[in-house]
Amino acid sequence: MKLYFEQRPFSWEDMYTIYDETDQRAYQVKAEPDKKCNWIILENRNGMEIGRVKCWKNLFGTWKFQILQDETPIGTVEKIRAHGITRYILNCNRWRVYGNILGFEYDVFDGKYLVMHAGNEDNAYPGKYVIDTSYSNNEQAALLVALAMEAANSTLPSRKK
Image (cartoon, rainbow, N blue to C red; front, side, top):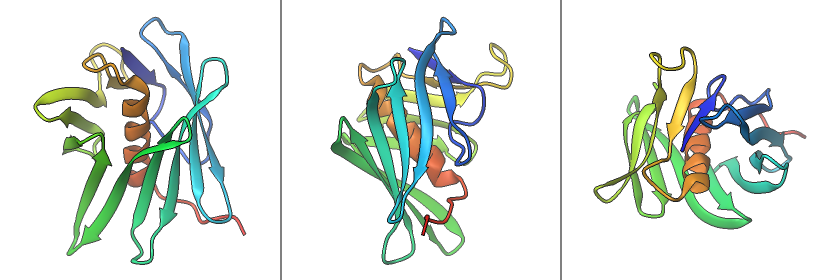
């Protein structure tokens, strides 16, 4: 299934809707700053929470993002910056990410099989970003990975006091 966003997949100041191919509301995304960490919450079309991404800074000053599906940890994304180079480490279902993550044009693979493509489809839907999970039967986990990757690219807010 292809999922479409009116804007970039994540903004810390906004709550927004993700649409499916029939232009129906599929998911709702919102942010919740907390005292110890920040949360990205993914809800289905009925408003039930199906997953979240926990965002925090570890002891070494790098950001880490834990992906939870139905309150069960399924993986992490870590953003590491060293010697002027930014790297992203995905540890979820043995998946690997390749492509231009900063430009929101990347693919996630499970071994040699494509799980998800994230990118911009200018020709079909100008100004909309798409996450294509039709290669996999794990749409919700793939969407949570995409949210974690985009949150890693965003400017993270300070925690509430």
